[in-house]
Image 1 (cartoon, rainbow, N blue to C red):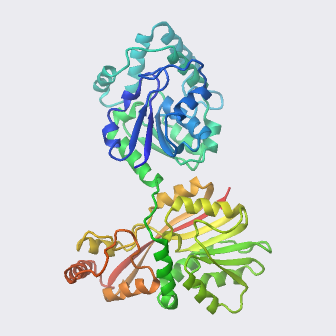
Image 2 (cartoon, helix red, strand yellow; image 1 turned 30 degrees about the vertical axis):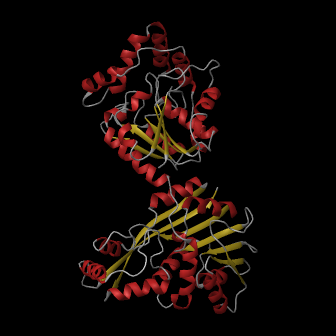
Length: 507
């Protein structure tokens, strides 16, 4: 499970996460931190933003997902920028890019109001905190009840660090940091927030279009108390697409499977042809002479040869992990000067910034780690270089998957990553998304054996971890066939392929 670090806001401590903590602990390794001078954490003797960030970084593991509410969210942004190895991804809750308004950023707290609040806290901390609690719940449909709950868990002691945190909050301006932030980021904003205007959601996406903003309906500033279920749902979804685990594919089996399929592949590859032809629309009409072009997962070389025809004078490389496919490709290619390269796409034997264009049609779904793959492709691309990809989504062969699930509990169908995983992996690899599209292609078969034979001929039969070993029993096969027949339509038995088309360039 991912490491999830929770940073609280001003005026409270780590107890503020009580409404959502038990559920989050079921989906992540959660650590709740008290900021220095709050809760059980000692004060920082030499207080500064740098010292504060260093203190937090020392208490969290590498590759964490950091979620911060209000001040905690603003500190999370700074932490992600200064300690990128510590912060894999970021979630902010009710956190503005700038807490105090200015002429060039009006959607924040008035400087006069902020000064008055800070002075009030200096003069009468208890009365000011009571007022502050009211602001936290203002706008919630159950405002009074929520206020009562908040005050029951409010801190009763406060240190001199609280004033210093208020002063820091007034000074923080995260706009430039947010614009440059490379990590995936989710911003949760509250519709009824009395401290952070809801229009900030659009402002944050304008600052960094790669970030995602979600407005939690009917929520006050303390949105994890106001709408805990919705907050949990958004955090859970974000974690699922950010923590991209290795797929469990056995690369040796992948290579062997497709190598064996080389002689039969082109006889049954109509879908692959159609998808690849559509993907060709996203590549340039021409490239500079001497450009380097890679067909990643070149297979039988069908599209490698088309790339060579289009880019006469370019250095064309057909790259595949299956030696059998490359040997077959060489035998089929007589008129083009194409270099054939057997390599793992996640560990390319190519120099940094050496490739102008990477074309990859229905290949990267067989790679084990999507984020590692896209970072490797970004490494070899020249600045401004283009990557165009067609790959399969999780809805692929859902009819086949559903039928097998009714027969047994084994994994019979290859499992593919959702579209958000592909998008966020591209962003995390510092690739700018130019185009993204989803297509559902349905092929019909008269008999189920036609589909299973086609998958075998393509080399695309089950190569996932968790598949059944040995023969599948007759009773289970009969149950599988009967279940699949339930999806028969007038045109035959459907087999759906969910195809993602992605075009990106290196920043």
